[in-house]
Image (tube, rainbow, N blue to C red; front, side, top):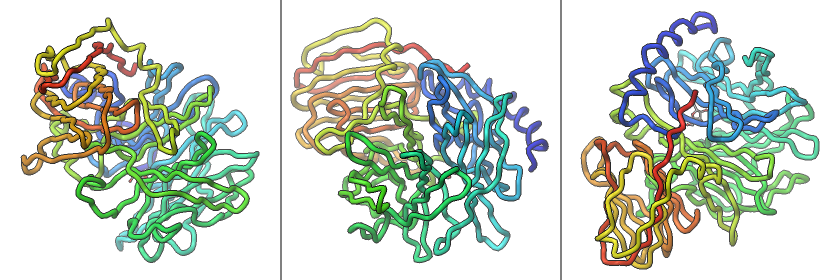
Length: 469
Ligand code: FRU
């Protein structure tokens, strides 16, 4: 489809789809979700000229992965968001099978998108072009075209450019698969975003002591944090362990030190970024005050996504809440951004034996729990959380088989910060030392109930809705 021929169909899909999505009891009240169709990765998260921009992988036509545009929201304060014109849709030979994930940068005052043009061939092969598009006065994006072809030595799976500037030079990391089917992160550099030099592989399967680390690494993001460097990536093909890496694909991070002069990254072990049921393809941006913020897709591809009940209403998936990243004692911490406190209504307080605590309305809820001992919580009968000396266990039924599935976070738990929306529960453990992000589909009104003999202290708020306008 060309740009002009797909527009009427997109408009019709949105007109028909939005009312159904917004009436769905599972449609989020304060998280980002598509007004119809399928949304996956956050893209182009950036602070530009006094506003935040958050783009997203979006198929407005049907709730599946067949057609990929870039949707676009913007905000001055990370709380009130507005819809912006659709930014990218497949229209050229070089992006005909999808405007895949990427990032946004401020290039001398022009908001510039760096994305992957995905091309599939009839014989099952594929290629990928790294492309640019620049914002015009109407808030639309003019495609500049490809600036990087498939590098030598890799299959057609090379994508998801994350671009940033360092000491006057542009850098780009790409997710890739080499010809031996090993997942890699490639680094390129450029004086102008148009001409790119290869700086080699900086991480991946077979590099820096990592073995059996998957066949494809997607959505890399490399940034400085607390005097060190963090590489976020989504390695596909990591073996499941009894209590880790249980999702179809994980989002993971490597902490280490990156040396620009040698383009080398020395790092420690590969750890999951989030131990919950749904979290993938996160992207970070730097705030003007220096904070490193992250947003992720609260979904996982190729798992049970196509069994989620919201498909009946023509939409699927949502983003996580926005989070601030910090490095503490060499570990990556994630906390909800401070701005979210503005959604809180009146504060409530309760202290006593867990089993005697009042049940709470889970529709829009923030809950802080201080615990010493064990605790069980039930979210609308559809998600169960238990805390004991070993850590946190979450349980939810498989949408396919109905059997109970578990996810784990190991460590001593002293506090939980829990953020609930109509079909999601995000659990921050010990001020962000661990996170578990999950979708769940309870019948509303859904209530959070407590059980157990330990003493708990609860502070909680009902949250205001924050719909995109
Ligand atoms: C991750 C991903 C990216 C790709 C995009 C396509 O979820 O597979 O690698 O660019 O989704 O929508």
